[in-house]
Image (cartoon, rainbow, N blue to C red):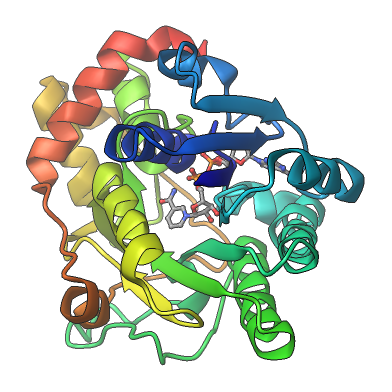
Length: 321
Ligand code: NAD
């Protein structure tokens, strides 16, 4: 089997490539990545000598290049990680978010349907559901929850999800969608909370925390996410959406404090900064469907995952200089 992974030089994509090639050494894997600031060729260094792996630098929005790649490589399956992903950047400049996250998804699905109904998996996010109140811990998002995105980033992802479902209905394209909560682990560009905090703490620099730090996120170790996607590819039902989550809700402040504790750094590095515009309060996922239908569940304990992540950043900080 040949699988095309877009955005494989980024955070989750690179972890997925390592996972997938380890679990399926008989398959051929092509990575299509634009190599923006968030994705680096050097992340994929460990795969350089793998004869079943090929990295192609290119843009998923470039219809001609995508068409050529499909003709050349004849993938059996496409997994779309490629995206602009940082909410703050989407607030500053939404254009590229709509272009890559929505139009890029369209280009890929067009190639899938014109090359003989190639299976397409869309990697999406819990942020498409919007947020939940802080004082209702009983509420969680299910796959049936309505889409109510808050930021240009999450609106672009929600739009893409709708397009994926429309391609299934209209063209009978074989699609699946996974919506996952916040990931953490190695290879994440240090602009998001966990790697930013680790890097700044290691350099004894102030650590910005939005508002009062009370916003709650559900955290999942990246390898558990990769395993969930692999299970959906193997056993997921076509046309279905699967929520993926860590069952690990923490306030942003708790996460930052935990990292400082692990690094033995003082809490006075924490600097509260004005809140993000439209900042989502709480995300929480109901993962009964993937647990019951596919037998997936999160495996990595938060503190263990955090220790591994911190260790990785300590050893690889120069990747981000
Ligand atoms: P990332 O920002 O680390 O990486 C994105 C990758 O996509 C980079 O390698 C980048 O070069 C590539 N890319 C960007 N635009 C491209 C284009 N036009 N053509 C080809 N490649 C392009 O992102 P991530 O955190 O690894 O997220 C991957 C996917 O998972 C995204 O779709 C994101 O919405 C989703 N997701 C992320 C999280 C999370 O916590 N990080 C949670 C749930 C879902």
